Image 1 (cartoon, rainbow, N blue to C red):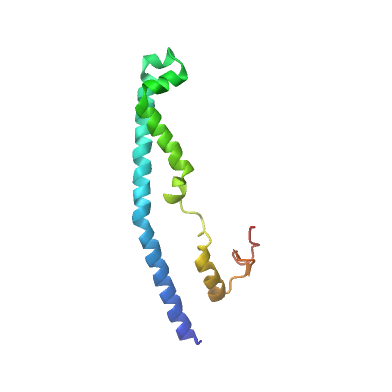
Image 2 (cartoon, rainbow, N blue to C red):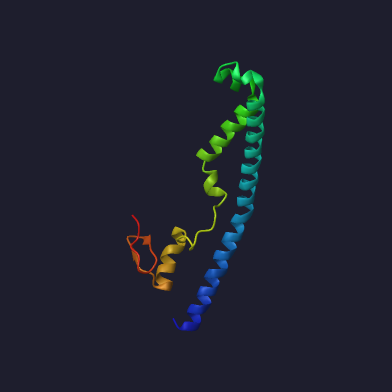
Length: 130
């Protein structure tokens, strides 16, 4: 394979990877919106729960029973985190890019001559984490 064919293959791979990433963005936006809505509901319910004078006079479980909006929104928020919403909304960008997804890893290892050990991905000069 000559260098012109390699360059064309790399461009095609880059286009396909870009298309894949762009397909993920609408889903990420919906997860972020859901997290924002549930967080605002939880904060609003918590505020109403805390300013209620009855909260201090009754037991903890009774106070939660008296404020079903807060209780349900809090349970929903906890459930979303257990379901992995923190992974779906994306995080702050890291100082360097994270390793590529597994299907891309083998191709990138061959294409870019990045050394790989036991299907683990590593930056040149680093040992892969196991």
